[in-house]
Length: 196
Image (tube, rainbow, N blue to C red; front, top):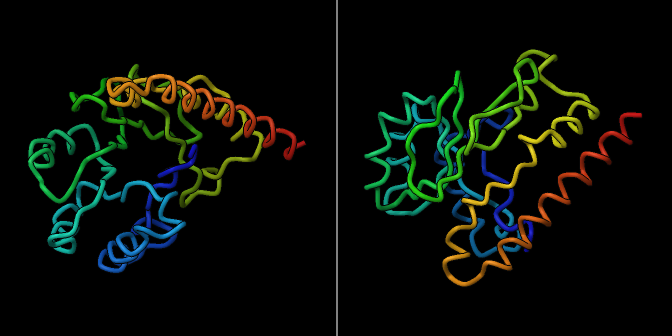
């Protein structure tokens, strides 16, 4: 399924601002449901990891960590030894000129706003912020289409599929990557058409 675990769970961030306990409970409750197939990792900032651990107890979550490069360095060792949190992605914010050292296969995103260049360091994928306190932070459909078509936004990170290849599923992994790239280009064209 192309969109399996496609939607990260950012319930504790604006605009929802759900309390941690409710957000974790809802995330865990989606497992095994039809919509649960589409839900990806739980997103949490490095500054709220303690609260997440306390709330989670003995449960288990796949985690996408939002952090600066320095914040990630401070919690990296601790996260790799955490039994009930599996770090699957890092979303780096702030100035990022060089990527930190990460475990093999880790998805690394660099967040950019519309006021910044869309290039990111090699080995990272672009995460575009599509909102914020300033109305200028919300892109038009045409801007979004341009960004999706931009090389950084549609680049296929082959590292994401290394494990599948090692397990003998190379053709499936490459087909999925190609389908995602075609879907991104189709979405870019659609957004431009809507904007006209």
